[in-house]
Structure formats: C-alpha cells, structure tokens
Length: 487
Figure 1 (tube, one colour):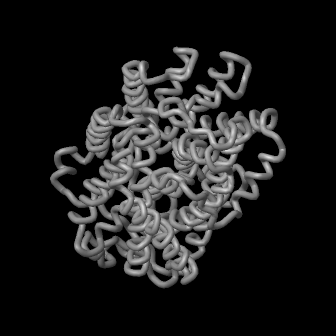
Figure 2: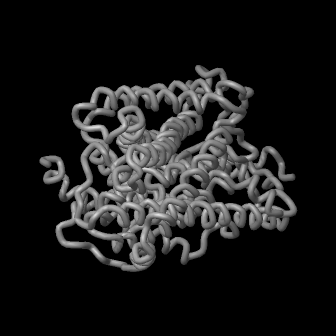
Figure 3: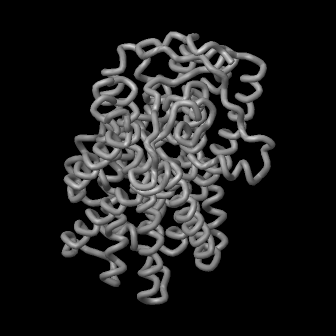
C-alpha cells in the first residue's frame, strides 16, 4: 500500500491521494457481472425515452427509416465518449464533470458552465410533459388535445413529484435507479418486441435494418430542429452521458469504491463522501486490477448501453413506420399515445400505447431528475468547503435541496410549448454538451492519467469524431435558430 501522505498534483483542484486500486470481483462469473454492471441500465432508462418515442417516430413516419443511420453513428460515438468518461472515474473515483474543474481556467468556470448547461438541457421538461399526455390518455380514453392542456399539466406536476419520491428510498440512490430501470426496460423492450412481432410487416423490419447503414441520407425539406434532436437524443445525449461517470462512482467501480456515494433520504445511512479523488500508481497489481475493471465497464457499455440504444430506437421506429402511412405529420400533443389508434382493438389500443408511452417517457424523466441534481451536487461538494460545512458532511442535504430546485424549475417550464418542441430544443443543446465534453476529456485524461492508464490514439480519434459530428449539428441548429423560434 502506498503511503497515505503520497499525493499527485491536481491542477486547479486539490491533490489526488495515491493509494491502491480496489480489487475487482473475482472470478468474473455471469452472476457477478450482472451484479456489478448497472450504470448503463440507468442510462438506458433515459436512452429509451423522448428520442425514441417522440422524435424518432415523428421523423420516421414523415421521411422513412433510412434516417436510422443517425442513430448508428450517434450510438457508437456516445459509447466511446462514455468509455472515456468512465476511464477518468475508474482511475480517480471522481465524476468526469468534477474532473473538468481541475482544468484551466478553474472550477468556478467549468462548474458554473456545466450547471447552467444541465438546467437548460435537462430542465426543459418536454419528456415530463409528454409522459403526462400518455398518462392522460389512460384517464381520457383518447389522445389528449389542446382542450385538455390544464389536465395534462396537472399530471405533469404529479409525475415530477413521483420522481422525487422514488429517489428518496433505498440504501443508495444509484441502486434504486438501477432496479427501477431494470424493471422498466425489461417490460418496455420485451413488450415492444412482442407488439412488433405481431403488428409490423417483415419488409418494415428489413427497412429498419437497412436504415442503420444508409449513411449520409438526409431528405430534402426535413425539419432542422427535429433532425438535430435525433442526433442529440439517439442513445442518451449530452448531460446524461456525463452522469454515467457519477453512477460508476456510486456503484463503486474502480477508485469509486474509495470515495463514497450519495445515499437515499429514507433507508440510506449517512456516508462520508470525499471531496477529492484518489489515484493508483502503475504497479503490476494495480494494472491487473485496472484491466479487469476496464473490461467490466466495456461489457456494461457495449452490451447494455450500445445494444439497448440501438434496440430502443429500432423497436418503436418500426412500430410507427409499420402502422402509420409514410408522410404523416404526428399531432403536436398526442405523439406519446398516437400509435394507439393504429394498433387497433378499439380503446384497448389507446390504453396499450399509453402504457408503453408513459413508462418509456417516465423512465427518462426519472433519470433526468436525478442526473442534474447529482452532477451539480458533486461539483459543489468537491470545491466548496462552506457547502460541506453547511451540510454537516451529509451530502444528502445538498442533493435533495438541488432536487427540489430542479423540480420547481422544470414545473415552471413544463407548459412552455408543445412537448415535442421542448424535447427537440433540449436534444439540440445536448449536441453542444457532447462536443465540448469530448474536447475536455481528451485534455483531462492526457493531463492526469499516467501513460499506462491513458487511452490509445485511436480512442482519442473517436473522441475527435464526437467533436466533429455533434459540433456540426449544434452549429447547424444555432444558424437556423431564428427560423425555428418563429414557427
């Protein structure tokens, strides 16, 4: 064991204490792997959400499944981005957004920027509004319309409060989210597969598979806002990707086991969370443990996050494309339950579509409510001693105050435009977050990780591709923003 006094310089943050990397689970049986993976399941709950049930269908029924190539590119690039976020966390135990605060010009700049971006990107609650329209279809036995606005808004406020209740119970919040999303994702993916099997023609299944490789296809006249949104919210997108590193920390991956986690308000014991991370030396034992931890993270990312992201866009996409005539414009309010009328079986079709629409969008809402409060909490905790003193070293006080602030913020904007517009606006902001985070992650891992733990050049090139791809669509969105806002 290295001396507790040994430290590594921390740039614009406190130094990193040098200590050994915790041993990974051994041997790596299937049961142990299933027990340790999980952060990608939480992300998957957000992944199969607004992009897949709102934005994707709106584009696919209008322009066809050839646009699925965007999901292919976005999902691959985001998976590489997640891996490099997690690399920093496995090595230091710090979430990647806390790591950015170690870079010039310092913590105040990056902490403020990412907090503002998080509230703007995930605090425009189109997903909550859309989940409420799906829930409203249950009570109304039809697709909600303009006249039902007040009723839908009330349901939106209710679903916000339900999220707060859910993340208040359990030993650690990460584990509560993990279990909730495992259940929701198994029900949603399994149910959609069965629906597709019975309702979608074989030619549409094939059209979707071909669409994944129709690289570069962009139909003339496609709406800029929705196209950029498909880029941003295929897979997870933006501030959500950054939060995966927070969940790896709380799950105890690598050095995350040494720094603590955020416990729940009810059922969770007070946990001392270190404001600074720790780091291992490149000893043979640490390198052996590192390879196993990294392998587990790769399994989590490629087999859960990436595969789930592809299925999450494909299964709803072919359902809509198989049942809705090509060229259809989906309704402004009823996208979340529109497919119910096409499923058939009378009122039961509406109920079935509302069921899937609600759970898909509510899982996104649950993840989003947590990830903003979580990341801002970790950034404040890492740099402001006054915050830690006020909280009496109980990080839950900071987390739940921020959770309430986020819910109030979202409730204020929940009726600000139609659900699809809000989701699309948030998704285009996500393109900015991913492009910026890719640049900062290259710098961060080069600056603080020893050569033995750094990514290879080809992985850094994958991050460069993130900058080009997501940055291009964000700039395209900004150029066209005056036209978008006039509509």
